Image (cartoon, rainbow, N blue to C red; front, side, top):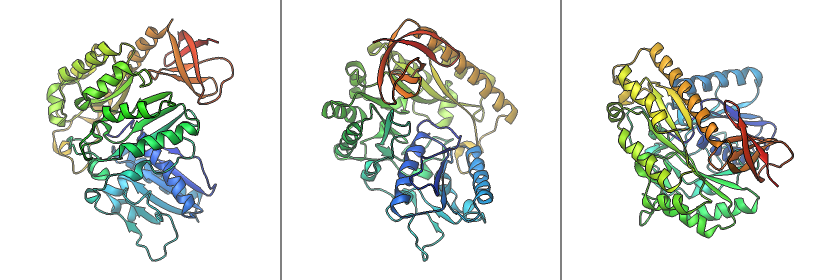
Length: 436
C-alpha cells in the first residue's frame, strides 16, 4: 500500500487559475499532483480539471467519479482529464463517462507534452505499466511549486512501483514493478530543496525500502539515507515515509542509531497483528517479527515514535484474529494509526476469499480507530515535560521530530525550527512553551 494513504480529496496550489488538479489517495499521489500541475503549465494547458485518482479502495474510486460529475456541472466548458492509479487499472470505467475528455495512464501523466493540445491524440492513453522498466530518474526531476506542506517540508520521490503481491492490494497493477531513482539525482534534488529554504525533506514512494534493488550493485535504502546525510550537511531534517517492516537493512538501523538528523519516526506497513491473517495477506513478516523490529529500533533510538497501517475485517478474520490486531496497538506502543476497513478490489486474491459481514468490518474499524485515539493520548502523555525541536507548518502549529503535532504561542514562519517544552496536551496534539 502506498505511502500515507487517505481517500480525502485535495487540490494543488494553482500556477494557472484556470487549471485545477484534484488528488485522491496517498502522499505520493499528492507529490505527483504538484509535478502534474507544473507539467500542465509548461504544456500550456488552460481551463481544465485534472483528477489524479486512487485505486486502493472502492470508496476512493467512487469519490473520484462523483467529483468528475460535479466538476462537469460546475465547469461545463472545462477539459476534464483523468489519470492516476484508478485510471491506469480500469481506464474503460472513466472512458465511458460522458464527462471525461481524456484518460492518461500513470506512466504518461508527468511526461513532457502530456497536457499539450494534441487534436489527433487518442482519448485514452494508457500503456502496459508492467512494461515500464527504466530507472526512474524522472521521479526527482521536477521542481515542486513549494512543497506539499507550504514551506515546511518537501517530498522527494525516490522510488515507484512494487514487486510484491499482497493479496489485498491492487496498487502494483497501477504503479508497475519497483523502479528506483539514482542516488546522485536524489542528492542533487535535496541540495536544490535546501537552497530553496526547506528545513525538512521526506523520502517517499510506493515501497521505499525496496529502493536500489533494480540499480547497479543493489544499494539499500540505508545506504541512500547515509549518502544524503553525508553529502548534504546543510539539510536539517530527513524523514522517511511509510516503510515495510520486512526490509529494514543494517545501514538504515545504523543511521537511526547514529544520525540525529534522521527523524525518530517510522510509519510501518503492518496491516494486521494476527499471523494467520498476515499469511493470507501474503505479508512477509509475522506478529513476532514486527514486535522484534520495534524493540530493536527502540533499543538504538529510544525517542522513536511508531505509526502503522492496519486493515480491519480482512476476509476470514475471526473475532479472535481481530483481537490479536487490536492488542498489537498497545503491546507495540504505537502512536499514530491509519485504519482502513477492508475493501475488496476486483482482480485481487483476497476478493475471492470468504468475506466478513460489512457491518462487522465497519464495527471493527471503529474499534481500531478508538484504540488508535487512545494510543495517541498515551503518546502525548509521555511527551509532557520533554524539550522538543519542531518545524513550523503554519501559524501556531508545528511538528516535532517524532511527528507529534504541537501548538505554540507567538510568531514563527513556515519552515522555521523552534524549540519548546511540552506543557500539556489535548486529545490529538501537544502544547509547548517556546524557549529562546
